[in-house]
Length: 387
Image (cartoon, rainbow, N blue to C red; front, top):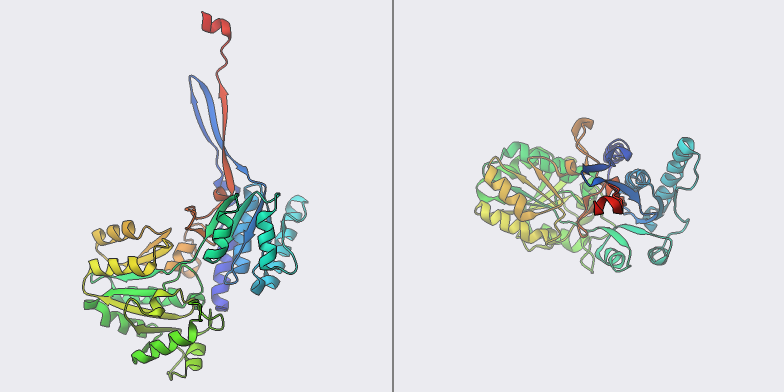
């Protein structure tokens, strides 16, 4: 799934942009009554479940963060990514052993399954859970009775208002939605644009390598082909190239498009489904208030990721507050919200586990520790009180 270039960028992000122990700075308060200190203490053994879409990157980033917090880790690998997950865990343990002499700080099992994940969640020696997956597995973690971090689904809208730099917006949206063939949960999954600049945006997106479906029936054909009977994207097409999808649908095209775009209504299945493939529907609205209302509606209350392209600060501020997402990107590609940036530039801490359902947002080593308070009060003798 995805592309080699994007995998390299995401792996470099996980390796070099994941904060370790340096983020765990203690806090201290002093006064007449003594000293109070807050520090970050480990949970113990963390049970983690990662996605098949970003398996090695998630193991690396979570491994660094969880070990930095003083924990050890059991990974419940996705069955569809068990080989690369196991290989990455072996490499991590090699590095840990060379640095510390400790073995098996991160472990998994050879044949992961749903049953093994359920057993892990219930195991008394697992102190904390970090789960990336669908609503069912996240819900199971939340009712486990353990401290749980849940990273759920997203359906990120990209809003474009009439004040935006349309050429730049088109570039950022196409580059980001096509990045790794759109398998990132943070990637733009639909565009909501003011009608007055819609045609300009579509033209500029075509100039950036997007292929426009001009026949509305083709959008229905793609939805019928790429969305399974349970309303989830068909795994056959997840993370596949745009050309592969067009070929399978029997839709003719020229060149080598990296993204498929199509105008639809806001309630079209391509808009309401998190597609995880390079298909990007475009919904037009008469004004910015309608753009924002539509974006809130199609995001589905997941509060995961959203972006806006605008030069109007009140619009940007209003959208940021109304969307209330864990990641909000202004005038840029949404992959910047994961720590990936153009030309290898640093774009903040890596974000491979985005805990929207449980509220931690983009997780770091702090997320995998308990905040401990230490008190050293001024000693008063009974005689001093009597005096």
